[in-house]
Image (cartoon, rainbow, N blue to C red; front, side, top):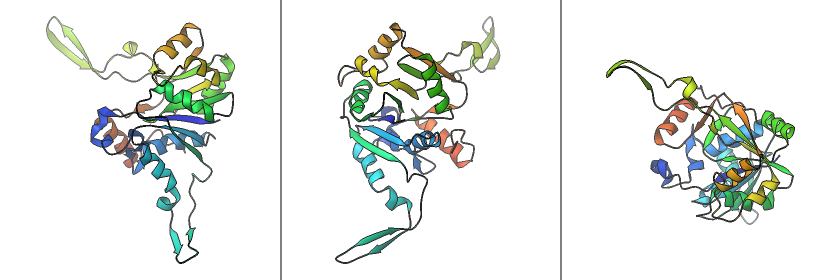
Length: 257
């Protein structure tokens, strides 16, 4: 199944890194987070990608155009009939990557609508270019096919960002993590879509998470595949450092390949 990845946002909250490159190209363990996302899908057998480019999309184009060059030992034969021999293989040789320029200011729904031109089947996968997970992609596909609605969202249940205070009057008696019962499921991306969702996408200004999702929900056309395992987005420098540290320490839960 083809995978659409939204790679065009500005990444303003990670300005330390995204001033010079798009957020999907910010490295974790020396590889762009985009690569980690694609490796997850490929591990589950999905290796045809449609990358929706926008802000600094040329950086992503250059990365894949020079992928073999940058990941292999090479021998160059110079002269009138130049030749390049690549000496080592890599696990991405069967990937098919479509690099689609969807515009600098196009919103998420608009990017997804443009990608539909390159989607071959009746169903496709989609996600954002800034989050990693160990969710079972194929299980979410099975779930989607069983319920028959147009959209499946991988719903995740992240820990609260803020601790909870226990009070006795105005005295703080304990400080603890936010109670589990106060946690709520949120949209973790990693969607399964029927291509008919395109009927809910209007133009370049269409924000997927707003009117299209509200209308799909009102029409009873969204289901939530609940994932209680690892999921983490990379919105801030702190989150980037955390993910990078997990990889360097050999404790990256999303490394399922």
